Image 1 (cartoon, rainbow, N blue to C red):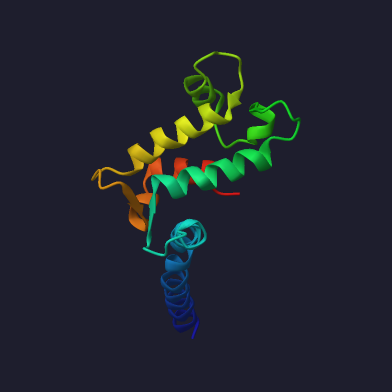
Image 2 (cartoon, rainbow, N blue to C red):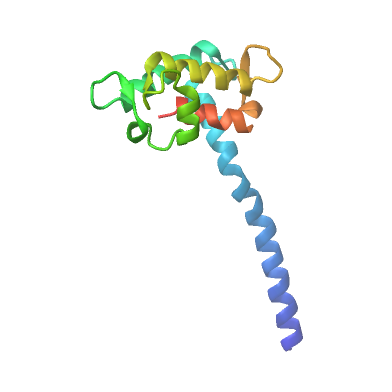
Length: 139
């Protein structure tokens, strides 16, 4: 009887693991697909650079709290590491203007668009560059 219980418990754990595993991998897919739905204004299932920059401009305006027309590390709220901020900050003032922010979005968009078709689809948003782009264009 104990052996049967042990086997049944093992099978139950295995089945539960198989049932839960797909759910654990879907949050990123869900986040990218829900981001696509929210950001894709022309409903073509892709983001073009204009859509990405429009979304980024709105995010910049929302994050910019102290009315100095720049974002500092605190206002960026971990959207960029200090290293990424430094690389995106050509004047080395430890802040990003809206133009600098949008230039970074453009750079990340290009990196997330490996086929260079001018759009980023849901699959491309799952890439490392796509996730970095999403951090800058999602509220």
